[in-house]
Amino acid sequence: MANFLLVSHGEYAKATKASVEMIAGEQKNVKAIAFKQTMNQDDLLEEITKVASEFDEAPTILVDIAGGTPANTAQRYQQKHTDVAVYSGLSMPLLLALVMGTPIDEAIKQTIDNMAPVGLTKKKEEKQKPKVVKKEEKPNKNVTLTPHTMQNVRIDERLIHGQVATMWTNALKLTRIMVVGDDIVKNDMLKTGLKTACPHGIHLSILTAHGAARRINSGKYVGQTVLLLVKNPGVLRQLVDFDVKLPEINVGNMSTKPHSRQVAKSVAVLDKDVEDFEYLDQKGCHIYHQMVPSEPKEDFMEMIK
Image (cartoon, rainbow, N blue to C red):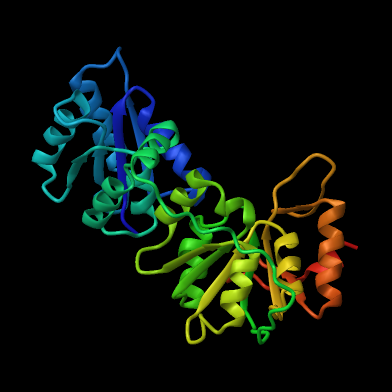
């Protein structure tokens, strides 16, 4: 995995690293340096030299702005270490794409593509150029679809993060990640983050429970290796009610909440969650806990008794 050294005016580099880790998990191959007002360029060069030496291989250096002291000092370091590349324009979307394994040229392109007006600005543009908005699909009990099986199902509140994007993607040899949740579909910011976090070369679908069920049961994903990713068991209960077959469910991460109880290091459940898990168990789903592929599977229903 590539190494990255972030250098910025003030705490920006460290904050960018911390923000990316909220989505992608801990990044041991990323280190950050803050250039402070009390430092001069020689002080910063000394710090870059020290931190860069902590990597097992030469890092790529990402700085905030071209022409600034971090950029100029990184170039001084580069003169003595010609195997080091230096890029300006450090940002959360850029770093997130890079830690997910996207080549840097493609990561830069994705970062540029992700720059778009949002909020009120977006609404003004929509008035100037009306768009045809498709109404959200509602369940139609009169439509019968052939039940279809989804083999790889994981509950993980962090959705696409380091473990999913690297370990599980490689272990399962995924071709597609399907994120399901009505609330997720309505959250433009979260959808943008998911698109950025999705590993390079993996297709991504972000769907409501009903929309996912219709596509699954119509055979749309036959021949693809798909990981179905949700935040909570309630979404899977919806899918089962829409006749999607879920033979196995991996409970990976559910964060602690008020009135929840811890049943594993990374899993805490509410009474409503337990009710949903029991419903899924009664429907024939085998539910287990497994954080990473190298760990053994644990019977989850035994854990919540």
